[in-house]
Length: 533
Image 1 (tube, rainbow, N blue to C red):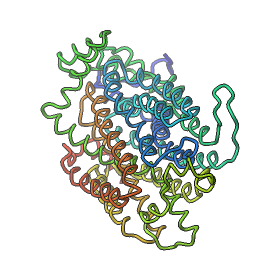
Image 2: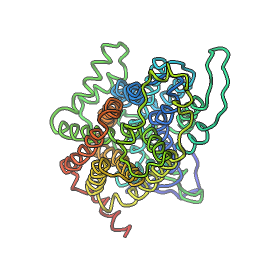
Image 3: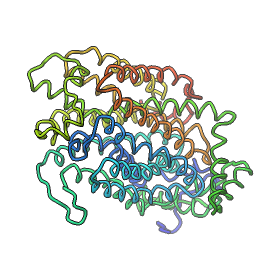
Image 4: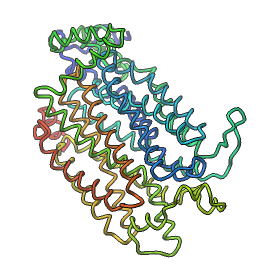
């Protein structure tokens, strides 16, 4: 271990072992934390691209794969179905085998599945590979929140998560830019071994998987969560990580960190025994039994109410932010078609009705170029870019004010504003204004990170990853419901889709008042908010 000077050291109070939260404060907040936040933000960006990147592909792959609107809805949702099927498993493994042990390999497997999906030639093959991509990306999608939070003192958890969300927002700005630079090209070639006509949308799928590959490689430089290691009784490894964090965060002239030991966290003996059992279980039946023991506490006693509220909130957020987003480029493309015909006053839904195409026409009509969209209208990329810029800016603002303002006002304001805009879209006949309201509706995704920050605080270390995974599993279920809802109703009952999403968000605003401890702010948060004024 590095040492600076002969006698100078930064000592723990009274030279005694300290609580982990106090030890984090001793390591300072610096380069190590920023690197961890950047990697975590890249992981979140990878999840976004793996699940939402397909929304840019659907309008332009319509003819290659002969997709109906309902099949587009299925493809929009299938990644989330994979996430739901595996999130319970990954949450259990993250709590029993380790956070990093789940995050890193699943990132590599998700990239492999995405690369494979770019070579598919039919709806069902693409559906299967996108399901696998969702199955694996589920591992880091929720676990990364617990992993990131467990490297920080309680006073910095919310800011760290919002910092990662800001990085994710900056990365997501690249999504429409990359889509525009790749999808709107006109090249194509045939891949000889698989006899696939490789068009730009296929390359775009591969590019969407690259952040997962990059963040997986970056995690090779990072250790397991110190809080997880401490809970497993691996005290020396925890201390070594804290020393490493301190060395990254301070200058070489600073005194060495004198941290002999960390006090163990309080944990029920029964929970410890289950944790040890789970780590040593090999058979499938035993594994399933341990998964049940790990999950059951979340739906019992004081945790039941917390789990239920978080699950409902995530369901409502994802139904709109992901489900409605999946058809955002497609709907904007349809509105642009009507404007190109000289129609200046039309509602979004009337534009959708005027441009619907039957998939049988794609098969039987000889004038395929007239029916097929090989490119997206530039306005779809422009408004998508604006949406991502709003997210990046919003995450930065929320990260700065969350401790001073509190989580409840942020949740109520975002839910209420987005829900109101969702309802009003139906009646607006000015396309540009309606699109802006649509953009505001989709920004309800801000609440995902705020709700996750609540989850990290509401559950103990041994249940935290599972709690976040379960709540996000219900969120992904909302994505599936939202995507299929739009796929089934868009061409016939477009107005109903906006009514459902808008009113559901308003209901989420009311439910936010019932999050346990949402009115309370810790002493550290109060000190932080005072010092920041």
